[in-house]
Length: 168
Image (tube, rainbow, N blue to C red; front, side, top):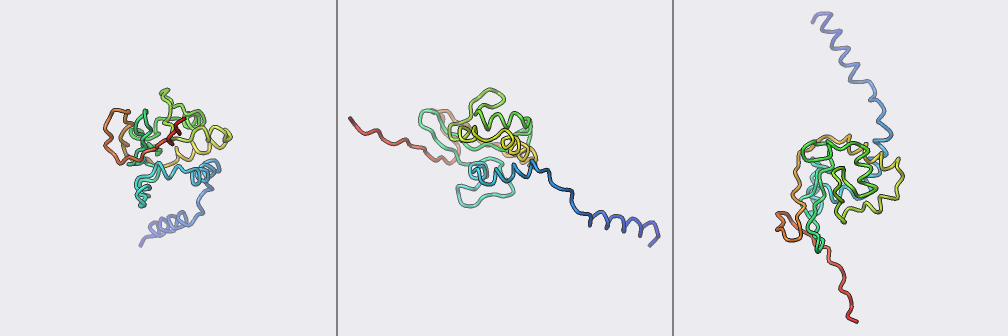
């Protein structure tokens, strides 16, 4: 071994043992909020079948929710993939959708998305969630739908059935 090879090996070992830089506090706050906000449930493949696919964490569901008169909606891909996820959305657009229910293209989010509950969170928390979602590695996963009320869904469907109104 030459002195140069030994020096390079020593330098590489030193770099590997350096402590990792501190994580972005905003991203960590977003990760914390996403962990209990229910995002994992509706946006991770396999969750509703009892076997969440952690390799595709938050990459969209293969289960749709039928809302009578509106259609079937599946939780979309929340990763940073530009083709099938939120990759082209800005942090501000994500935070706005979370708090107003309006996508960057003007469409309204499906009623199954609890944006009305999220509307009450602070702008800082909405921004933290957006920062966390933008930090996720891209996972290519095209979620089918949404399906209109007369379209036949190509995915497993859970129905949301309103209670019957008692006869008067």
